[in-house]
Image (cartoon, rainbow, N blue to C red; front, side, top):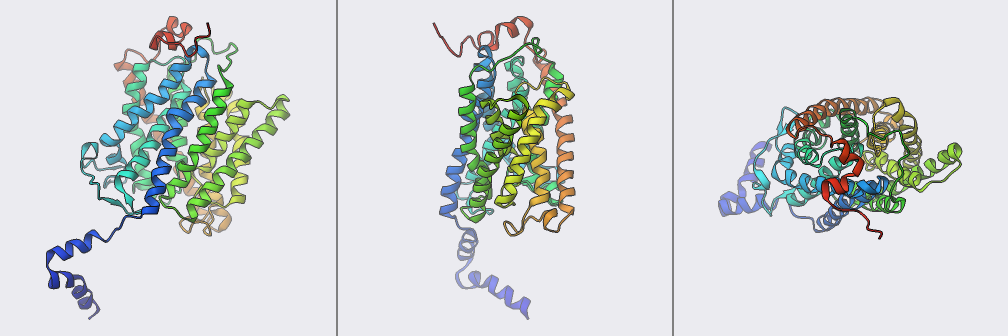
Length: 437
């Protein structure tokens, strides 16, 4: 009898008012949430600012003046091309209907299958807005990887690499974790991109650094062109990260507020840890070190932001500052790659720690979707470890293949010795970052 009653209730609009009423009832099943939409518009703008402004200045200031424009250009063009790839087909591959847990189905090019009225159920926001928010993540991820190969990579190689890498590497990994793929089904927690963004970018950068080889003057003293610009870039990244992490809740609610708070706390704790260990080792408080510590803390809290409380974020940040310092001053030498701006040393290392820390500190009182080892779920740590290992292995192999193909197409990925000595600003762009005379 219950089944009959349910059927009658379901058919009542059709029986009384016809097909039109039933269609209207279906359309109103999901209603746009104005508050969530307003917040996500702002959050998306925050994250957009991170790549062509924050990261570009952060990286640009750390390179030499003869390569500053080229370094900035790699971030800017990376964002430009990733944006087009994303709306063209990347969004479908990441968030389309699941195919075997690996990738999404490509329903239409350039979002031709998405209507203005379509609503994303996760936060009752427009699907177009959700796609735009995710687009900014694709842009910053590939741009982060550029830090490993600045001062020696052909710009034409970079252009083609961005297009293929976002398609072949980024979109599938995003689908695994956020688009209904196999890692999501196995319970991997990644609130805003520990695996999808930071481990992915860090490993990709390290692979390219190995394949491209070291800079010709790697063993000489190489000084940043502008610590001021690097610090300004770090602060812009910090600002944008509130949209990155708090925005990943897709709603204006308590979890978003918690993610906002722990993001700031972890960044501050990591910067303090870096300052202290740097002074203990070198007797200096460098601004490059403080900027690096800020970013390390932001990276580490990213996967955990919506799952951990404020005390946990202090621990995550403090450890992030320590492990990233080691990643640059110890592990980098052991690995032997010329990871120019430490994409792996900061984003890879701190990203790994953050992903694993999520499995330790995820607090069900913050978010019922996540329970870590310290709250009674030891299995979550192992699941997080699986996510880290799978992402690293896939990204390393896929990036190597993509980069090799791109280098073959562009006649080798490295500029010639004369261009490298002259600097890529003049040899590639015909410009200088500063005209001081």
